Length: 390
Image 1: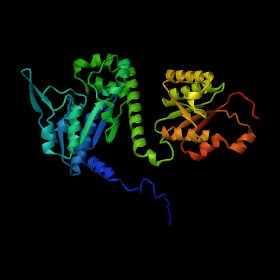
Image 2: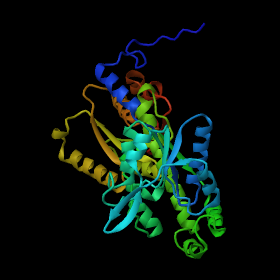
Image 3: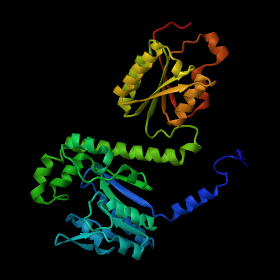
Image 4: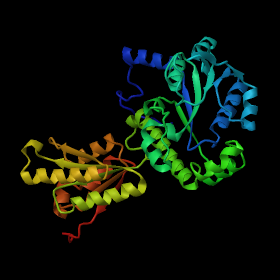
């Protein structure tokens, strides 16, 4: 028999406060959101979503469609036919009829799952909300699970990147805060070559749009860049969710998304370390952090140290890195590095060659050994400075 000893203040055993119970009850009433993300139209988001809707229904769940656009794709249309569709709500605007998702009818019908496609859509004036993702938010608050889909170019934070890649301004967007509320994200991935073939075969757009699309948006270069962007964004979202839900119970980073910490001191190798860290971060598409641990109060720095800090901050700005100035406050430098690494879920640490002699390391301890002993899942890199070993 195995016995596991755990501290009585471990999160698994700690009693919940009344506020936490109320929060958990509120969260349990809220519906769950599943998002299907793709790099471009035609990757198969709607088809996959409908397949899973049929699977849910076969398991005895009540599944309905509030809105989905088949784009005259026969395979998609075939999957829609067997599912109940809640009629769209007619809205008269400037003497013309428009049709939007009927949020009130969905909430009154109260199915287990509802499909609401094209999240970034802007609703016509007179609708419950200005944007469709806001409609979804109201449905979720009513305790109904929602399945939806969107392309990477509709995420607010990547709007400028998409414009640089494709030359197209995407005007209908969804805020990143909404994506962060999703309970599940599923990336629907297709290679650029397969997607172009699908387009050429008429499986995405009508024949009169094929040639123009192949020459403009659906170029191999554009699709490869958008695919890379989609993979990176989903990885970032998953990494953040794991950190928020599980990270506090773990002794080290998860490692899905690389994060590099460069530790600098007032020596000739500091800038060399920062540049080495940037090259690693650039190669790994990782976040970069630059840390300086000081025993002094920053307000009492000499003019020379203040200038050095300014140089490091300028390099950090140039390399899109985060600069951290951390005061020791009676802590060992190694303990400060460990605390910062755990706080930011660092996966790799860069250190300069130790200035301590062998005898000093015996008396005071090796910073590297201490970090290795007190952390897990963190790689440590020692960058030589050309000095001879004492």
